[in-house]
Amino acid sequence: MKKLPKCAEPKDVDEWQSEVTDVLPLPQVEEKPQAPLIINPIKPSPDVKNLYNHNSFSRLSIGDIANIDRKLAEKFISGKLKIEARLDLHGLTEKQAFDKVREFIIDSYASGKRCVLIITGKGSSTEVWWESKGVIRQSFAQWLNHQDIRPYLLSVAQAIPEDGGSGAFYCLLKRHR
Image 1: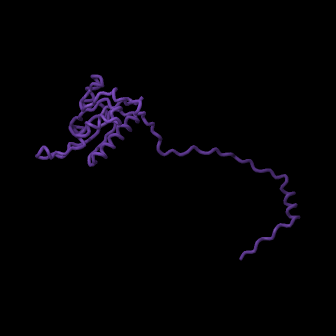
Image 2 (image 1 turned 60 degrees about the vertical axis):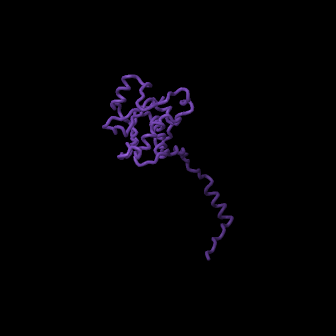
Image 3 (image 1 turned 135 degrees about the horizontal axis):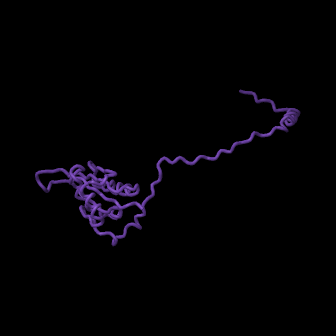
């Protein structure tokens, strides 16, 4: 067991106090706290409630170009607009695909993209027409008018063969203002 040190004698304390009376403390540099580290910048979320009004949007169908001017429509349908993002839905279930499409459209709009490509695939082709699959491709046309997706879309058109043909669709998004 360790022995504790002896307590200082009163004369030692008085001597110490007399020695340190003229000592001044060192100047302390006050450091400002650093800004917090932000790893992922916060994306502004679009206000869907102000964008979407059931009465203000007409039903959108694939190939409908009524919402855009002729020059833009020609570029859009012919695949001459720059594709700024792509989403491939191969291998997903219908529910997963819908969630991905909704998230992709909203994120693309928020980041200022105008023309995106969504690849649904053509579905498996069989000899018998009633066994044909392509569930995502068939559902895609209905998803366009969903209240979470429709406010961001101006037009949707089938892609040209170089970009996927009947298994892919161009989506023209509204301008992010």
